[in-house]
Image (cartoon, rainbow, N blue to C red):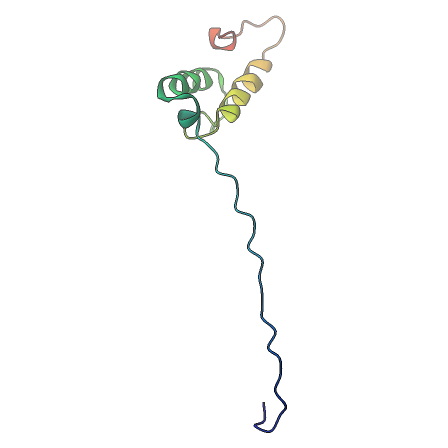
Length: 86
């Protein structure tokens, strides 16, 4: 700006901070190490996925969801693994 220009109000740039995500509890934090390990073992036993969410660091709901999804894949005449009934 030229030296003889009238003073300008400086607009303060404000960027609103995004709302931080709600911290997610791992399954181990949520239900404890022993119970989450049991859930993880069930998940691994039934899941046909190559990279299933069967990990105690994930939410329990994700692990349980994978168990339910995997067990639902069996047809009416097929024998489900015992882990599906647990």
